[in-house]
Image (cartoon, rainbow, N blue to C red):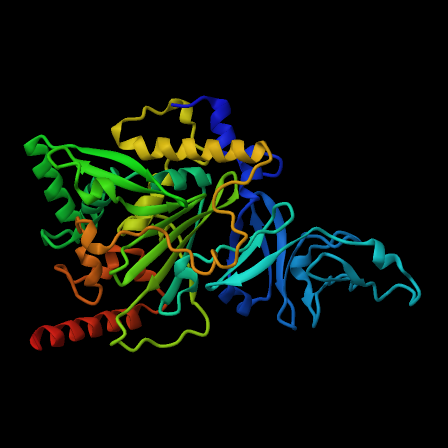
Length: 452
């Protein structure tokens, strides 16, 4: 439990707030590049600020204040020109620095445009996303995290708009205990109500609950701890009947990259994911599921000219929450706490160890910035920033623990559904292609096994 003042300190990100000041030291994804192909001018909101993002006909990106300085017409209706964005009302033209370049209805000798500007922020593209920096100068480097820049990845981006504060999303990154009931028992219950539950032991939810029932019978419980590193931390778990020499306790899993990213997957797995909870405002989070599939070199993977993106609703056509896949279950746990949860009412336990450590880290970084210092994960050296690899454990270092089904996305489980349907991957724009690539991986493995 924390006090009301601290709850406000840690969760609110608007201009002038302590956590907002911290967040403005980082680059944030604001839209998928693919959406700029549909419409090169987009209204966006980030950290409580409304802005307009555009890509002009010369290929330059701009992120500027939302309203023209003349009569305050909204620039989301602006026209991209060869250089800059032109207001639809009287034609005032702005460049990516926010300067007014033209006022075409004024006398030719007017210099009034030289006195006019709108707010503007640096913006860059990377990995199929457009990133923005809203903080003070000098501007740090856009961090080149591994999955955004590696050359051998096949990428898919999926987004959800969530009616809740970013911190509720982020706190789940430190919570491993929820897996049993949120992704086990709830998943079973949802499928039961749909008439689709089977006793297939290879389905994740059944395997999870069976293992948990065994632990309960043996009186075994799980301990949790964080393992800090330069970028954030990994999460260690240990069954009460295990030795503390176990890699799950000393290596950990699923690195958290401060301030709000989770890396899921091991280096030897095909499927690797960044889960990114972008603070849009105090009660809205844009959650990005950024998938990078790294197939063996023996499998020919098509080149991507554009990383595809899809927006996924949290409710179906009947207005019911979609809960029959893992990320959908995570998300309901986040927004079921309310728009901005009242942490003064919570009662924390053993399973919340990593959550508490994240809050402590967040408080520390807020304090660093309030004292005029530089928070973690701000990069200035291009050589150090070439390809940032979080400390992801090798697959052999950590037990599979019910994750085996993610190598079977091309197969049909008992009940007639694909193993892929249990994950957000079922919404991938290139779903059929991915399943075919997984099938080819299996063929390669079968040939290698036959060759001895």
